[in-house]
Amino acid sequence: MKLIAIDLDGTLLSLENYITNENLQALEKAQNEGHIIMICSGRAPEDIEQILKKCDFSCPIAGSNGTLVQAEGKLLANVSMNMENVSQIADKLDEDRIPYRIYTNKGIFVPSDWSERVALTLEGKRMEGMSENLYKRITEQPQKSDLLNYIDNYQELMDMKDLSVQKFFVPIFDGEKKTELTIHLNGISGIITTSSGPWNIEIMDQNGNKGNGLKKVAEYYGIPTEDTVAIGDNFNDVPMLEAAGLSIAMGNADPTVKELCDAVTLSNAENGVAYAFEHFILNQ
Image 1 (cartoon, one colour):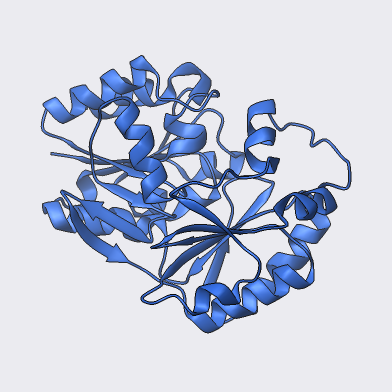
Image 2 (cartoon, rainbow, N blue to C red):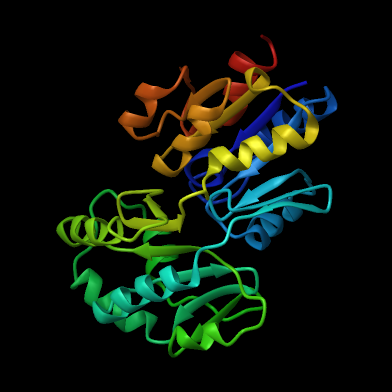
C-alpha cells in the first residue's frame, strides 16, 4: 500500500481547473489497487471537497497548505496561527492596501475593498506569463458565498468564538514589493511564508505545511515514509516533496522544484498525474 499525496492547482487540475478523465481514471485505479490517495492543496478544505464532489471522488485531504487534515470524517490536524501574529500581518497588509484572503475554520474572509486593493497592486499592468484563467481567478472580485464573506476590518474576526486561522493568501504582482513584504513577514516569529506561484505569498503557522499534512495521513493509515509519494509543481509543495519517499515534479513545475525531485512527469496540460501513476508509481 502506498500513500500518494497530490497537489491541485498546476498539478492534478488542468489549465481549465478541472480533473480530466485521464487523471480521474488513474486515481480510481490506484484506489482499487488498495493505495491511499490524498489531496494536499493550498485551497480551503471546503473548496477541495467541492472539486472532488464534481467527479464523485472521495479521499483524505490536507487543505490550506496542510494545516487542516481530514480522513474518513475525522479531523487529524488543525494547525492554527497565533492571533497576535494574525493581527500583525493584517495590520501590515491593511497599511499597505494589499489584498488578502484569510482562511479559517469558519470560512474565507476578504477585505470589502478587495477590488480597490487589487487595482493598486496591479497599477494597470497585465502580468506576462499569467494565463487568462489564472488572471481572472486571482484578480476578480470574490463572490460572497457560504464559504466566503467580506470584512470591513479584520478586528471583526477577533470577536468570533472558537475561530482558528489557518493561513493568509496574498496576491501581489510587483516583484520588488513581494520581496520587501516577504522580508517583513519573515521577521515575525512563529510563522512561515511560501508561494504557490510568482504572484502570491502564503503565510501559515511555522508548523503548518504540506509535509506535515502528508505525515499525519501516513501515520493514520500506518504507512511508512518510504511508501509515500508526493506530486507537485511549486514552492508550497516542497515540504511534502521532501517528506515523501518518492517525489515527482510536474513538467510545468518551477525549475528549482524539479531539481529536488526524484522524477519529472508531463505537465498538467498533458495529464501529467496520470503519466506519473503509470510510469513511476503503480508499475514499480
